[in-house]
Length: 304
Image (cartoon, rainbow, N blue to C red; front, side, top):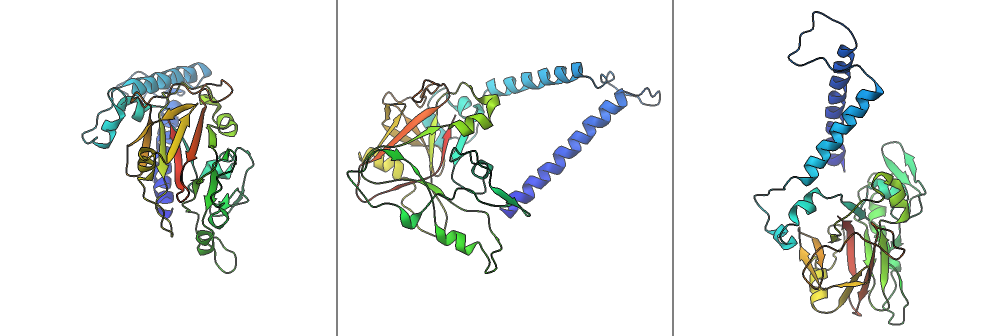
Protein backbone atom coordinates (compact mmCIF):
# COMPACT_ATOMS: atom_id res chain seq x y z
CA UNK A 1 0.00 0.00 0.00
CA UNK A 2 2.93 2.37 0.53
CA UNK A 3 3.98 1.79 -3.07
CA UNK A 4 0.46 2.63 -4.23
CA UNK A 5 0.42 5.75 -2.04
CA UNK A 6 3.74 6.95 -3.48
CA UNK A 7 2.58 6.42 -7.07
CA UNK A 8 -0.69 8.20 -6.28
CA UNK A 9 1.15 11.23 -4.94
CA UNK A 10 3.42 11.37 -7.99
CA UNK A 11 0.31 11.40 -10.17
CA UNK A 12 -1.14 14.11 -7.93
CA UNK A 13 1.91 16.35 -8.38
CA UNK A 14 1.79 15.83 -12.14
CA UNK A 15 -1.91 16.73 -12.33
CA UNK A 16 -1.30 19.79 -10.12
CA UNK A 17 1.37 21.01 -12.50
CA UNK A 18 -1.02 20.59 -15.45
CA UNK A 19 -3.67 22.56 -13.55
CA UNK A 20 -1.21 25.37 -12.76
CA UNK A 21 -0.16 25.55 -16.42
CA UNK A 22 -3.82 25.74 -17.50
CA UNK A 23 -4.56 28.55 -15.04
CA UNK A 24 -1.45 30.44 -16.20
CA UNK A 25 -2.68 30.28 -19.79
CA UNK A 26 -6.10 31.59 -18.79
CA UNK A 27 -4.56 34.39 -16.76
CA UNK A 28 -2.44 35.43 -19.74
CA UNK A 29 -5.58 35.59 -21.87
CA UNK A 30 -7.25 38.04 -19.45
CA UNK A 31 -4.41 40.58 -19.53
CA UNK A 32 -3.24 42.49 -22.55
CA UNK A 33 0.52 42.15 -22.81
CA UNK A 34 2.30 43.19 -25.99
CA UNK A 35 5.47 41.44 -24.84
CA UNK A 36 3.81 38.03 -24.92
CA UNK A 37 4.01 36.31 -28.27
CA UNK A 38 2.34 33.06 -29.17
CA UNK A 39 2.14 30.83 -32.19
CA UNK A 40 -1.54 30.20 -31.45
CA UNK A 41 -4.48 32.58 -31.16
CA UNK A 42 -5.03 33.98 -27.65
CA UNK A 43 -7.05 31.80 -25.29
CA UNK A 44 -10.56 33.14 -24.59
CA UNK A 45 -11.01 34.85 -21.23
CA UNK A 46 -12.39 32.94 -18.25
CA UNK A 47 -16.16 32.69 -18.61
CA UNK A 48 -19.01 30.23 -18.25
CA UNK A 49 -19.33 30.14 -22.01
CA UNK A 50 -15.71 29.10 -22.43
CA UNK A 51 -16.09 26.51 -19.68
CA UNK A 52 -18.98 24.95 -21.58
CA UNK A 53 -16.88 24.97 -24.73
CA UNK A 54 -14.08 23.10 -22.93
CA UNK A 55 -16.54 20.58 -21.52
CA UNK A 56 -17.89 19.95 -25.03
CA UNK A 57 -14.36 19.31 -26.30
CA UNK A 58 -13.66 16.98 -23.38
CA UNK A 59 -16.84 14.96 -23.92
CA UNK A 60 -16.10 14.68 -27.64
CA UNK A 61 -12.59 13.46 -26.84
CA UNK A 62 -13.97 10.86 -24.43
CA UNK A 63 -16.43 9.59 -27.02
CA UNK A 64 -13.65 9.37 -29.60
CA UNK A 65 -11.58 7.31 -27.15
CA UNK A 66 -14.44 4.99 -26.19
CA UNK A 67 -15.27 4.23 -29.82
CA UNK A 68 -11.69 3.86 -31.05
CA UNK A 69 -10.35 0.38 -31.71
CA UNK A 70 -8.22 -1.27 -29.04
CA UNK A 71 -4.99 -2.91 -30.16
CA UNK A 72 -2.79 -5.30 -28.20
CA UNK A 73 0.33 -7.11 -29.27
CA UNK A 74 -0.20 -9.79 -26.63
CA UNK A 75 -3.79 -10.80 -26.10
CA UNK A 76 -3.77 -14.58 -25.72
CA UNK A 77 -5.99 -14.46 -22.63
CA UNK A 78 -8.35 -11.91 -24.18
CA UNK A 79 -9.01 -14.04 -27.24
CA UNK A 80 -11.68 -15.78 -25.15
CA UNK A 81 -13.79 -12.61 -25.37
CA UNK A 82 -14.74 -13.43 -28.95
CA UNK A 83 -14.73 -11.31 -32.09
CA UNK A 84 -15.71 -7.68 -31.68
CA UNK A 85 -15.67 -7.63 -27.87
CA UNK A 86 -12.10 -6.53 -27.19
CA UNK A 87 -12.79 -2.81 -27.67
CA UNK A 88 -15.86 -2.96 -25.42
CA UNK A 89 -13.81 -4.84 -22.82
CA UNK A 90 -11.02 -2.25 -22.56
CA UNK A 91 -13.05 0.88 -23.38
CA UNK A 92 -16.31 0.13 -21.60
CA UNK A 93 -17.63 1.83 -18.48
CA UNK A 94 -16.37 -0.74 -15.97
CA UNK A 95 -17.76 -1.13 -12.47
CA UNK A 96 -15.90 -3.10 -9.78
CA UNK A 97 -17.50 -4.45 -6.60
CA UNK A 98 -14.53 -5.49 -4.49
CA UNK A 99 -13.86 -6.79 -1.00
CA UNK A 100 -10.18 -5.82 -1.12
CA UNK A 101 -8.86 -3.07 1.16
CA UNK A 102 -8.03 -0.22 1.10
CA UNK A 103 -11.23 0.72 -0.73
CA UNK A 104 -13.13 4.01 -0.66
CA UNK A 105 -16.28 2.12 -1.58
CA UNK A 106 -16.08 0.02 1.57
CA UNK A 107 -15.13 2.99 3.75
CA UNK A 108 -18.14 4.93 2.45
CA UNK A 109 -20.57 2.06 3.01
CA UNK A 110 -21.16 1.44 -0.68
CA UNK A 111 -20.10 -2.19 -0.80
CA UNK A 112 -22.60 -3.23 1.89
CA UNK A 113 -25.29 -0.82 0.57
CA UNK A 114 -25.46 1.10 3.86
CA UNK A 115 -24.00 4.49 2.78
CA UNK A 116 -22.57 4.84 6.31
CA UNK A 117 -19.17 6.51 6.31
CA UNK A 118 -16.30 5.01 8.31
CA UNK A 119 -14.21 7.10 10.70
CA UNK A 120 -11.10 8.51 9.05
CA UNK A 121 -7.89 8.77 11.07
CA UNK A 122 -4.67 10.64 10.42
CA UNK A 123 -2.42 8.73 8.06
CA UNK A 124 -5.23 7.36 5.92
CA UNK A 125 -6.56 4.74 8.34
CA UNK A 126 -10.25 3.96 8.82
CA UNK A 127 -12.30 2.33 11.56
CA UNK A 128 -16.00 1.69 11.93
CA UNK A 129 -16.55 0.14 8.51
CA UNK A 130 -18.27 -3.20 7.91
CA UNK A 131 -15.68 -5.94 8.33
CA UNK A 132 -17.99 -8.71 7.23
CA UNK A 133 -18.04 -12.24 8.65
CA UNK A 134 -14.84 -13.70 10.14
CA UNK A 135 -13.82 -16.88 8.37
CA UNK A 136 -14.05 -18.74 11.69
CA UNK A 137 -17.81 -18.03 11.74
CA UNK A 138 -18.62 -19.20 8.23
CA UNK A 139 -21.48 -21.66 8.44
CA UNK A 140 -21.09 -25.35 7.90
CA UNK A 141 -22.70 -27.06 4.93
CA UNK A 142 -26.48 -27.13 5.33
CA UNK A 143 -28.48 -28.78 2.51
CA UNK A 144 -31.69 -27.26 3.93
CA UNK A 145 -30.37 -23.70 3.97
CA UNK A 146 -32.65 -21.20 2.20
CA UNK A 147 -31.62 -18.55 -0.30
CA UNK A 148 -29.32 -15.85 1.06
CA UNK A 149 -26.79 -13.16 0.08
CA UNK A 150 -23.13 -13.85 -0.60
CA UNK A 151 -20.98 -13.11 2.45
CA UNK A 152 -18.33 -10.40 2.82
CA UNK A 153 -15.61 -12.26 4.76
CA UNK A 154 -12.21 -11.68 6.33
CA UNK A 155 -9.43 -13.45 8.23
CA UNK A 156 -9.15 -12.15 11.85
CA UNK A 157 -5.47 -13.09 11.91
CA UNK A 158 -4.72 -10.48 9.26
CA UNK A 159 -6.27 -7.79 11.44
CA UNK A 160 -4.26 -8.86 14.49
CA UNK A 161 -0.99 -8.76 12.54
CA UNK A 162 -1.76 -5.23 11.34
CA UNK A 163 -2.18 -3.68 14.82
CA UNK A 164 0.48 -2.81 17.42
CA UNK A 165 0.03 -3.81 21.10
CA UNK A 166 -1.01 -0.20 21.89
CA UNK A 167 -3.77 -0.37 19.29
CA UNK A 168 -1.98 1.63 16.60
CA UNK A 169 -2.97 0.48 13.11
CA UNK A 170 0.09 -0.20 10.98
CA UNK A 171 -1.52 -1.85 7.97
CA UNK A 172 -4.51 -1.11 5.73
CA UNK A 173 -3.91 -3.67 2.99
CA UNK A 174 -6.20 -6.66 3.52
CA UNK A 175 -7.18 -9.40 1.08
CA UNK A 176 -10.81 -9.74 2.17
CA UNK A 177 -13.25 -11.67 -0.01
CA UNK A 178 -16.83 -12.68 -0.77
CA UNK A 179 -17.73 -16.24 0.22
CA UNK A 180 -20.07 -18.47 -1.76
CA UNK A 181 -21.15 -21.11 0.73
CA UNK A 182 -21.42 -24.81 0.01
CA UNK A 183 -24.76 -26.61 -0.02
CA UNK A 184 -28.21 -25.12 0.44
CA UNK A 185 -30.02 -22.63 -1.79
CA UNK A 186 -29.07 -19.82 -4.12
CA UNK A 187 -26.85 -16.98 -2.89
CA UNK A 188 -27.46 -13.69 -4.65
CA UNK A 189 -26.15 -10.19 -5.17
CA UNK A 190 -27.53 -7.31 -7.26
CA UNK A 191 -24.89 -5.03 -8.77
CA UNK A 192 -24.46 -2.14 -8.71
CA UNK A 193 -26.48 -1.88 -5.50
CA UNK A 194 -28.49 1.26 -4.71
CA UNK A 195 -25.73 2.93 -2.66
CA UNK A 196 -23.26 2.35 -5.49
CA UNK A 197 -25.71 3.70 -8.09
CA UNK A 198 -26.41 6.82 -6.04
CA UNK A 199 -22.69 7.47 -5.52
CA UNK A 200 -22.13 7.36 -9.27
CA UNK A 201 -25.17 9.30 -10.45
CA UNK A 202 -23.40 10.47 -13.59
CA UNK A 203 -23.40 6.87 -14.82
CA UNK A 204 -26.61 5.81 -13.05
CA UNK A 205 -28.36 4.82 -16.29
CA UNK A 206 -25.26 3.87 -18.24
CA UNK A 207 -25.75 1.43 -21.10
CA UNK A 208 -23.55 -1.56 -20.40
CA UNK A 209 -22.51 -4.40 -22.66
CA UNK A 210 -23.15 -6.80 -19.81
CA UNK A 211 -19.78 -8.52 -19.41
CA UNK A 212 -19.63 -10.20 -15.98
CA UNK A 213 -16.16 -11.00 -14.62
CA UNK A 214 -15.44 -12.92 -11.42
CA UNK A 215 -12.03 -12.61 -9.77
CA UNK A 216 -10.97 -15.23 -7.25
CA UNK A 217 -9.12 -14.45 -4.04
CA UNK A 218 -5.33 -14.56 -4.14
CA UNK A 219 -2.73 -13.75 -1.51
CA UNK A 220 -3.09 -13.47 2.24
CA UNK A 221 -1.67 -15.59 5.05
CA UNK A 222 -3.94 -18.58 4.45
CA UNK A 223 -4.08 -20.99 1.54
CA UNK A 224 -7.26 -20.80 -0.53
CA UNK A 225 -8.57 -23.22 -3.15
CA UNK A 226 -7.28 -23.36 -6.69
CA UNK A 227 -7.70 -19.96 -8.40
CA UNK A 228 -9.21 -21.82 -11.39
CA UNK A 229 -11.92 -23.30 -9.19
CA UNK A 230 -14.70 -21.30 -10.87
CA UNK A 231 -13.91 -22.82 -14.26
CA UNK A 232 -13.50 -26.31 -12.85
CA UNK A 233 -16.63 -26.16 -10.67
CA UNK A 234 -18.89 -25.00 -13.53
CA UNK A 235 -17.44 -27.65 -15.83
CA UNK A 236 -17.98 -30.36 -13.21
CA UNK A 237 -21.54 -29.26 -12.46
CA UNK A 238 -20.65 -28.24 -8.90
CA UNK A 239 -21.37 -24.53 -9.40
CA UNK A 240 -24.45 -22.96 -11.00
CA UNK A 241 -24.47 -19.25 -11.84
CA UNK A 242 -27.42 -17.24 -13.14
CA UNK A 243 -27.35 -13.70 -14.56
CA UNK A 244 -30.82 -12.16 -14.40
CA UNK A 245 -32.22 -15.68 -14.43
CA UNK A 246 -30.13 -16.99 -17.34
CA UNK A 247 -27.62 -19.77 -16.68
CA UNK A 248 -23.91 -19.25 -17.31
CA UNK A 249 -22.42 -22.40 -18.86
CA UNK A 250 -18.72 -21.52 -18.79
CA UNK A 251 -16.10 -19.15 -17.37
CA UNK A 252 -13.23 -18.04 -19.62
CA UNK A 253 -9.91 -16.81 -18.32
CA UNK A 254 -9.14 -13.13 -19.06
CA UNK A 255 -6.32 -12.67 -16.53
CA UNK A 256 -4.40 -14.72 -14.01
CA UNK A 257 -7.33 -15.05 -11.58
CA UNK A 258 -10.29 -13.40 -13.36
CA UNK A 259 -12.91 -15.17 -15.47
CA UNK A 260 -15.64 -13.84 -17.75
CA UNK A 261 -18.97 -15.67 -17.75
CA UNK A 262 -20.42 -16.98 -21.01
CA UNK A 263 -23.95 -17.94 -22.10
CA UNK A 264 -25.05 -21.19 -23.67
CA UNK A 265 -24.70 -19.66 -27.15
CA UNK A 266 -21.09 -18.70 -26.37
CA UNK A 267 -21.71 -14.97 -26.01
CA UNK A 268 -20.11 -13.08 -23.09
CA UNK A 269 -22.62 -10.21 -23.41
CA UNK A 270 -25.51 -10.36 -20.93
CA UNK A 271 -27.33 -7.26 -22.13
CA UNK A 272 -28.10 -3.96 -20.37
CA UNK A 273 -29.03 -5.59 -17.06
CA UNK A 274 -32.53 -5.49 -15.61
CA UNK A 275 -32.08 -7.18 -12.20
CA UNK A 276 -35.47 -7.89 -10.61
CA UNK A 277 -37.15 -4.48 -10.76
CA UNK A 278 -36.63 -3.65 -14.41
CA UNK A 279 -33.96 -1.02 -13.72
CA UNK A 280 -31.40 -1.02 -16.51
CA UNK A 281 -27.76 -1.22 -15.55
CA UNK A 282 -28.24 -3.58 -12.60
CA UNK A 283 -27.61 -7.33 -12.69
CA UNK A 284 -28.89 -9.98 -10.31
CA UNK A 285 -26.19 -12.63 -9.99
CA UNK A 286 -27.13 -15.94 -8.35
CA UNK A 287 -24.70 -18.62 -7.18
CA UNK A 288 -25.46 -22.18 -6.11
CA UNK A 289 -22.61 -24.42 -5.00
CA UNK A 290 -23.66 -28.05 -5.33
CA UNK A 291 -20.90 -29.50 -3.20
CA UNK A 292 -20.60 -30.40 0.47
CA UNK A 293 -16.86 -29.83 0.65
CA UNK A 294 -16.06 -26.70 -1.38
CA UNK A 295 -16.41 -22.96 -1.08
CA UNK A 296 -15.82 -20.26 -3.70
CA UNK A 297 -13.87 -17.16 -2.64
CA UNK A 298 -14.17 -14.02 -4.78
CA UNK A 299 -12.10 -10.89 -4.35
CA UNK A 300 -14.09 -8.83 -6.87
CA UNK A 301 -16.99 -8.84 -9.29
CA UNK A 302 -16.55 -6.61 -12.36
CA UNK A 303 -19.28 -5.46 -14.72
CA UNK A 304 -18.61 -3.79 -18.06
